[in-house]
Image (cartoon, rainbow, N blue to C red; front, side, top):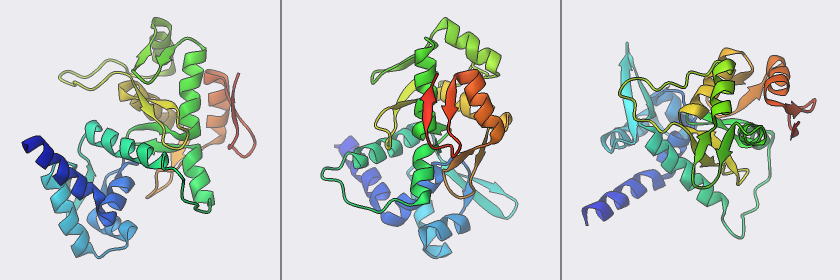
Length: 239
């Protein structure tokens, strides 16, 4: 009964439109202030603060005080997985409701952050490339790097040794809500994302989950991963 009651509470918290909008914004992996989240949810700052207190109390969000501002973020990878799973289930709605596609929608489907790793067409392409080169095994049950895959990512600059006391999942398959296929999450996915940012292959849009590929990234993905993007960075093929 306690578990069921807790599930109802969590569902009610996530089910509110304003709270869902703010949590979706935080799935970009960046910490945002109450004012920024209020603006994104189109509500007042005082209303947003009330919502955020509830989400922090339920351990769905964490908050950090820095000078005058309080910064909110998703509390854990577990919470992020729950939110992404809800999104994936919602995308399976039948029959689908018609909604006109915008340039922003296309950008999100092409490349976006999924909490702390890459998703969208690009995220799935990276997973496909690692599988094609026999660097990884990815399926609905799990994700796993081969010995060759660990060597490849080490040479790429990924730091795959978990920090002391870190119980995070090493490699996990994450169902992509827009592609209906798997990209790579866990420490491996986070390190690929971190390294791509470090190499200036990718840039992130402020206040959205959209990720954009730079000229250096277009060359890097082709040369290192065998992922070819066309001139407008919307079509992907694996060599």
